[in-house]
Image 1 (cartoon, rainbow, N blue to C red):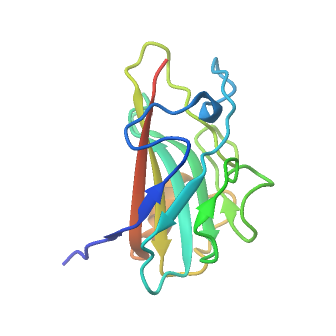
Image 2: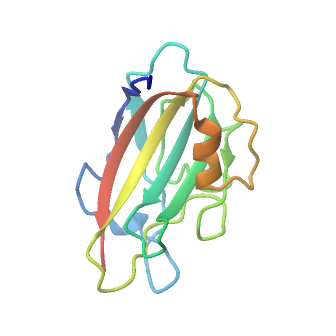
Length: 166
């Protein structure tokens, strides 16, 4: 029998559900000229027993056959219920947290940069409340590996989806 995952509340001052992402969040390479700044995020309705958080940004519309991870962050302490803009970049992440590898092959947030002419892509920003303090993962952890390691440990999840096309 599958257990039902609770919902975290999740918001950002930089965009709302279903809204086009601002230029400051867009990638700054590969033909894109944005600010490559991770959004501020605030989450709440955290269930009892939460020992850490993880964050991902995933584009299921990327023409890769498997989607594209733009942000992989984990082992975020429970003393943190928000991130400031840019808080997902190397050197700006919360103390004790870890940044995994994005599908760009780098650590830290890598903004959207879909192929020109594609319909706007959906960017799922997810925050996960976990029942473990540390996942036992390192900075070589990819989005797929993170999801594998989180199996059975997710107490709640919040999602905020933004759009971007060029």
